[in-house]
Length: 195
Image (spheres, rainbow, N blue to C red):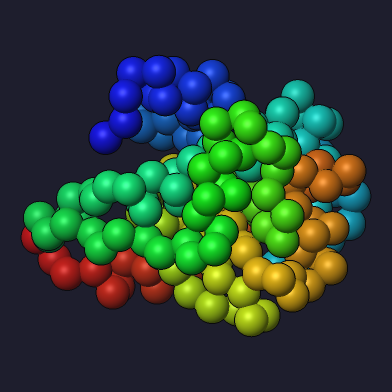
């Protein structure tokens, strides 16, 4: 989909770090999950617990870069879905150019954008991978995708709520969340057509 130089840029700025953190295909071990389930969160509610990525040696800026790179790739190419059809191009509107320039290293993290990362505690989510899916929430454009035990969410909007800005993985808190994603994973896959 991309030239060699851009693929190397994407790999160096996020992809290699993130892929080391997600659950391997073998499913025998998921080191990040194992560490998070034993750690003490900064705060928690019934659905998720909040941690700081640096506590686990994670560069959360690379997680943000990876998330936006996957979403942006959906604007310039298509993926093959499980039923063999191609995805429709994602539409970022006025956010596409600021994200493209950020990915090229020309500008800092785009304004009015937040990236939320959730490590899933359940086995079902660690077996799954799904492509970025757009939806609207809080009057913002959202894209969510799952990669073997890690849920990535990008939010974009001029009126992005402050709590999403505060929980963004690039905020000073360097947030990463931990919680059960089984219900949402099953919901996503129930909408897919069988092969």
